Image 1 (cartoon, rainbow, N blue to C red):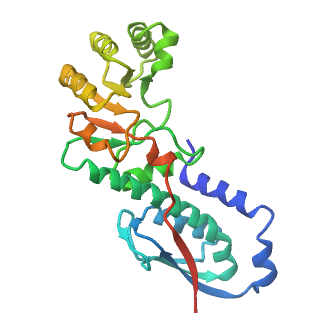
Image 2 (image 1 turned 120 degrees about the vertical axis):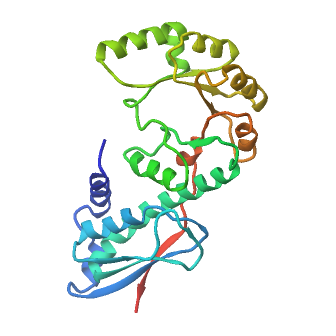
Image 3 (image 1 turned 90 degrees about the vertical axis):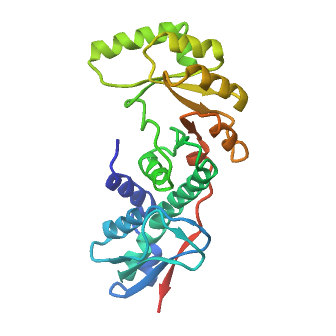
Length: 279
């Protein structure tokens, strides 16, 4: 997996190409300036350090002063950070820095809202792998900042036997049996989750005595409660599919351990934030 520096470097390369011809052509090379990053709507800010890193990666002599911390609530007009240095450098970094902090803040804001909807139920909110290519690390970081939890980072850190795996393998029992052999042969320390579509599959997953978590996919809240009660803490439980802000609390009140919501990262509105020159 790429680290944050690599992600930012690729974003800058994509934006700069062979040069910021606009800034180079109309802003004198030695001109210095200051600018402040301002929230234009209410939300939860995330990605402050990432945005700061963008400026530093463009020009390590840029001075960045952070006035807020990730996870803080912002209101229109709040100053998030201030930068000073070569004007050209500030202009080169501006859009990439804003792209990161706006998207991450949008994710953190939506996550915090969903977390507030299930407060007091005991259920934990999870993200999914429905992320922007090459941006997963930062999007999942934004979920954590918003108060949510990360599901697996990728295909490598948890075995998740989904419906297609089950169908191709010839059933849950067969899929789990092959998985256990694979784990033993590869000497892996890794958890197993199985997606189920009905109570028959829930019972089959439990009967393997080898599943760490059971995903209950597209169950209604009523059916989910029935399944959660049947499982009775013999495995962790996760609700997924068809969950919205309108019904998430109904799902949380069933006693389920986790609720995964793909919309936290793939269906969000970036928070409106701008960078304005100071004079």
